[in-house]
Image (cartoon, rainbow, N blue to C red; front, side):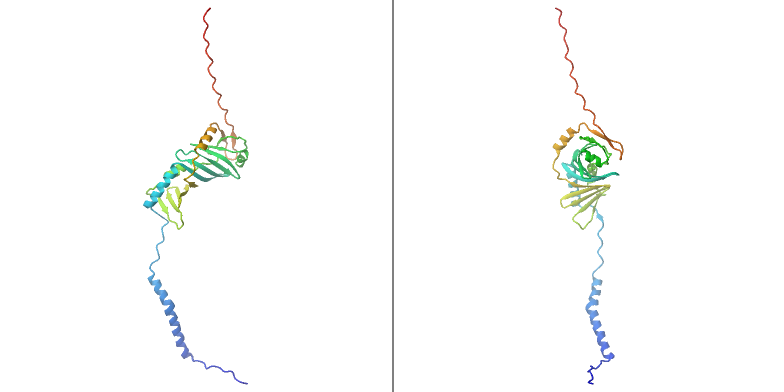
Length: 262
């Protein structure tokens, strides 16, 4: 049988040095530049702090936002959560007085909201009141005090802290939003200005360009001159009817003069 051809084998002593040369070349091409980059790239950059002091530009923006939420009309949306229900509160606030109109949403129903000073009133149908566990068909305004929680967002209190101070800080972020912090207040700014306020555990979205609601406020205020009242405690609330309107004062009887003697 014909023997297959086999190439002559290279002795180990001949090819071993060649392999070492190849390895050395690879190290020179790859590893040496890598080591040089590691040596010359410098120290790691210092991480950005979580917050910083206000710059002059920051202070001007905060001052402008303070003016915006303390003048004109401001739209505020917030939530109130109690042991029985979660309420969505929408307000159009007259910043100068703190009075506001709006609505309160509970489940899939809503009621009108009127805030005059410390007086908080709701006007809803029987379905709305039923979502709060209140059985009533009172059609008019009901003074709820704070029995459903603090419905109005404390805008005036938040505005007091919305001002530059030595303790105020700006939170750093890589997003297009900036957070201002001062005490219990956190305010979020976007490119269009202030967008939210958080005071303690109460948060609200804010729009400082709300349309005026002076006519609605005046009309509702006149209609709420006499109100029913929410009484009781959570879980057993009832509505006491509004008192009867006062009777018109009767005019004094005309005096009769004595006739002269005939």
